[in-house]
Length: 340
Ligand SMILES: [Zn+2]
Ligand SMILES: [Zn+2]
Image (cartoon, rainbow, N blue to C red; front, side, top):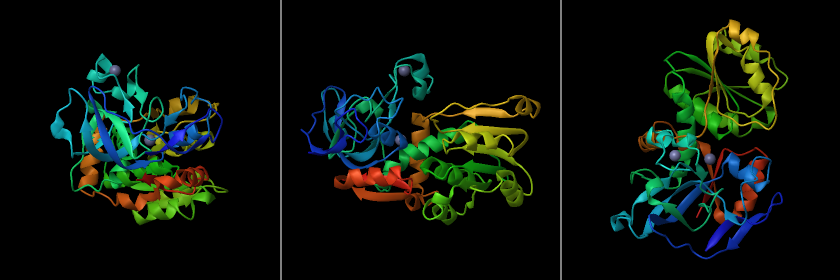
């Protein structure tokens, strides 16, 4: 079968290859893949970035998947064949107290499908039955590849409370920032999404189609942009860009008693003088990945078409994975999805 394989430790050593179709072992199912999203972490793995040394080639990338169960391994209910499913990207052990409390994203033994072991950028993928979630038939299978990034945005928003009328600034119109902005809007918030000049052609117009206000911060004062949009400071600042200067700017964009919510990863340290934030009694919240509960909420929101999720996805045939990765690295895409 065709698969997109990270085949060497050097940056960019990944290609479409012919590999044997995997067999489901005990407790596993074989999924015929409909699509697999390209995530920021896939780009880091593709580039062999620092922090991704744990990825040991050869490994098939892809953790944002949707497909149909076509075979079950020993110990798995054969009735599962034919079901539309997605799978948890970050897989906890499901046995420790953290997992049992529902926080599998924080499990000490967590592993990521498509990074620690073979993933879904392939015609078929083997997944543990206990890590899959059923999808309703009415949810388009290729669109369902967005369940994971939507669940990450939902998890982040669940860290705080958004009330109708709240003023929310989202920094960074990558997929997670776009979903956070769209979902905050669904909560009834007034949302301003901040991007760069390079976001002007694709990402910010996509946000505008969801009814989100946008602005380009490059060469502007973020304080001034927020004041002119909201007539004052924000209640909540969501940092989804992964840029340290953007995170630093957030502290002067929220009101006293306001909240800074971080849902990005960074490639360098930040110096920060905390006293003004202490005097303003800001809440600082950090969010990582998502849990089963967030997946379930993402699935029902998407099945109910709570917003036009399809407006945020761009499809590429699996064979063109390398081109899709290069374009995604250039930062010009919405959510890229490889379809099989
Ligand atoms: Zn992802
Ligand atoms: Zn665990």
